[in-house]
Amino acid sequence: MSEKNFDPSAPHARQDEFGFEVGTRLTAPDGSPMLGRTGVIRTPHGDVKTPAFIAVGTKATVKAVTPVQVQELGAQAVLSNAYHLYLQPGADILDEAGGLGKFMGWQGPTFTDSGGFQVMSLGSGFKKVIDMKSVDQSGPDDAVAPGKERLANVDEDGVWFKSHLDGTKHRFSPEISMGVQHRIGADIMFAFDELTTLQNSRGYQVESLERTRRWAERCIAEHFALTDSREGKEYQALFGVIQGAQYEDLRRKACQDLGAMAFDGFGIGGALEKENLGIIVGWCAEELPENKPRHLLGISEPDDVFTAIENGADTFDCVSPTRVARNSAFYTPWGRFNLSGARYKRDFTPLVEGCECYACKNFTRAYIHHLYKAKELLSHTLISIHNEQFTVSLVESARQAIEDGTFFELKDKVLSSYYAGEPDPQGQPAAL
Image 1: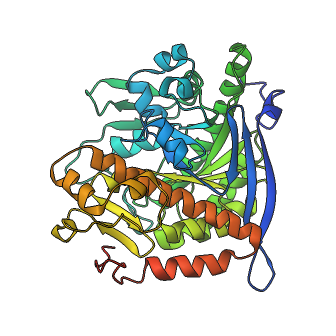
Image 2: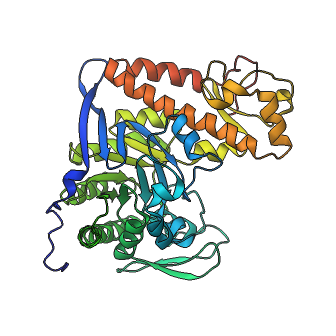
Image 3: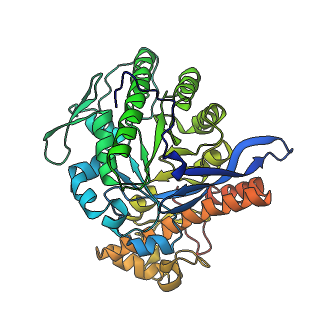
């Protein structure tokens, strides 16, 4: 396919194999319409009822949890990362195995992040978290974590980066990212974009946004060409990624530019401060096509969940439920607690009384505390199962509350309890 003659707004003939149906729209307490909604995303490997929390399986596994357990705790889909799978075991291995789902033994829908976040965050030394501290508009254009070496460099064609595993040099471009993600074989992929931080100047944000727009056109062209060339493969949906940091005009422009292209949906990405989450999601939801799903990258805390949903996010993902579990932290309706404390040594109650997850139905805090102190990996598994189910169930409750017209009552109840900072029923202080 010639990029010169390619129209990025023209849909592909096979795009009707993916779909999104809007359900009930959220209304404010005074009855006025809001941006939140329920819906259903239809993929070759099943439907995703939205709003939905997508469990993160970065390296083709939800850490410490088997695919059967992921299904039993209620997760509808899993998101893996193209950067990590490209480096290990290699996209060709997943392609030969029949795609991501078959490779990891997961039968439901799958997503892949393009790898842009990891290329830039690991490449600038920030590892898992982009620096969210804002600076004035005259800030640096080349943000690097203190004491770290820049391992990624952007040019018009793509990004050169060094592997965080062994230091070898690699190249990602829109075309390479599309090729990698097609071989990985997820139901939903994300276009390759440039991630900036809040430490970049506005001038650089403008330049980067335009580069991401050009890359988006190249991603669609390559995606459609690969769709045509890989006969017999199920259709893979492609989402464009909205950047623009915390600038309203840049976010709206990105939505208008990418919204006019033939994407199947959209990811809302980029650096932002927590207090601006709802505002930025709202800007995007107002501009993006109503009939396409919106995925918010990287949130899971209860206040962020409700804020994202009411402002128009349909799906979102985050590594936090399993990451904090590996440090003994578990979620409850009264806040987050750390099971490593000596107070749990003789606490023979479940993590949360009445919780239906496998961990709570079968084990006590005392037992899981023992596992953690003894460095037994089963503690990671049990707490991860609980935390994932807690988050998945919270979002499902929000979905049902939109249907029932009780969303804001649920929000007030959940957040007033979770962030009260009061002891849980077993008398343990909240650790928020």
